[in-house]
Length: 351
Image (cartoon, rainbow, N blue to C red; front, top):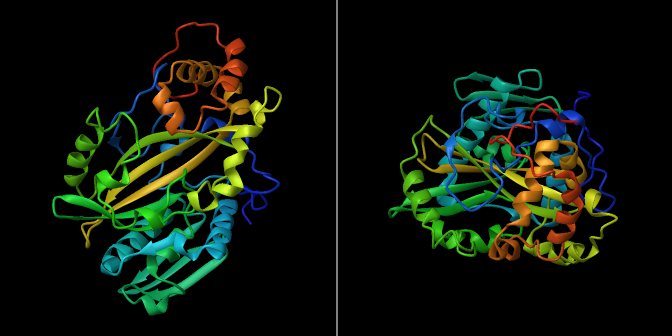
């Protein structure tokens, strides 16, 4: 096992998940300014960016092995977390090819892909997998191609089929979501999927986003950041398991807020797929405790300012109402009010 991975981490029950100093500094902090409001905030998904999380098509970090193990646990308990409608088979193979080629290119020490026509050999060294298969023949894999490869990647994925001048959520691997259900959303249009989001519809955010994505070109992926907060380093905050995590919000106190409350950031990536013309939507989840955020001076001050003035509608939608003030009070002594540079890079005084 490559020592840069942490295979024993857990995201449930005893919550042994921890971020190293390196993982803290590569975190995709989502606030470039001192206030926050929904926006399209899409940029080209090209290698490089303000932290190391942006350097590859699909980020692989020290939590890779543990997160793949967590996904396997969720799927064992609820196989319906991976679902793809029958007409999306070409998009399944597109996804497998994209992720395999990207991993092999960006992390050659950990992954390799060998092709001889349609006879492919895939090797995933961190997970101890070596698989020979025929590209295009699902019978040569242990499961359907979309499930096969997304079991080996961090974060969630959905497949959007483009038809009728709209995008439809027609497939997904969703085990680390922030309180939404693939079972409920499968088959929905773009606006139906985003229906619960407050303020953004009135601002026209989703109208603009849909128009942009309908014109997304192959070979020109894009990315954006989204965020919420969660209690404990729990990846699976699904509606199906709400009884397991919903009451966690009542357990935050001034004494435990720094270790118990986590900023939950999604690095969202969108790729046009070549054969199916579908869009692969990657939703890579990162967790960073308030304690670790406070170790980075710029981030601690900025989070304090964002939460202090966050609109009530967003507090309610993101489930922060019960504990937002406790986080604000914890961060307040760290914020001297001095101007901060724009952008999300951690700055020179980190750690």
